[in-house]
Amino acid sequence: MSELLVIRHGQASFGQDNYDVLSDLGHKQSEAIGALLRETGWVPDRLVTGTLKRQRDTLSSMGFAQAPEEHAGFNEYDFGDLLHARFKGDVPDLVKGDRKTHFRALRETVFEWQDAAFDGASETYAEFAARVEAARAFACDTKAKRVLVISSGGVIGQMTAMALGADKRHMMELNLQVKNTAMSRFMFSGPKFGLHEFNATPHFMTPSGADLLSYS
Image 1 (cartoon, rainbow, N blue to C red):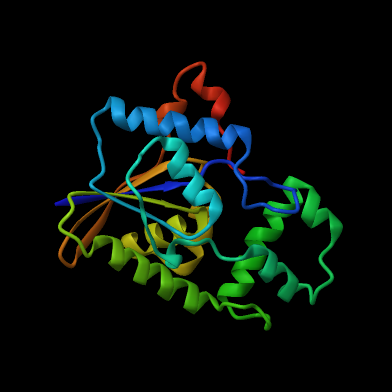
Image 2 (spheres, rainbow, N blue to C red):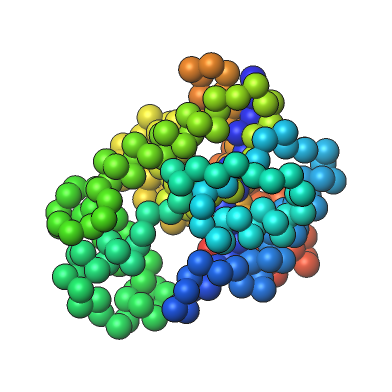
């Protein structure tokens, strides 16, 4: 069996005009998970990221020199676009700036997106699920034994729900649990694909590491 280790990007820039930039904490988180993998002897023989800057920069800060492959299927869904479609362009200010309100709106909006309850989004949920599956198949179409992917919370939630045979609502419930730079590990061989570990953060399980924990 081969391993597919999917890591969520480090903390990005919540509340800023450009979310797709790692914060200082995000770089520190990435350095910590990279160091842990090397200390435990887990060296990937294939690297894959989405095309988002925060994903590529996470891998760079992890300290792996090998140039990664890219697959846009590992990109996050565009929540800003979904909000714009749901609220017809008039997104409440509180949704943009207050974390509690933001994540409540995120959950509700994704559920409505899954049910096709509003029009105008650049991507349907079915299209999102299909591209995530295509990205997973791409990453697993290899002779490599250890594949490292840097992706995002929604993609990881979708992959995990699929691996468990769970319904679509579980995608979002899992999405909201995924910590920055958390590891989710899958095992694969040919058509066989299963979850081995979800949302693990051993690099945070020390007094100094605990200060690195974040969800957004």
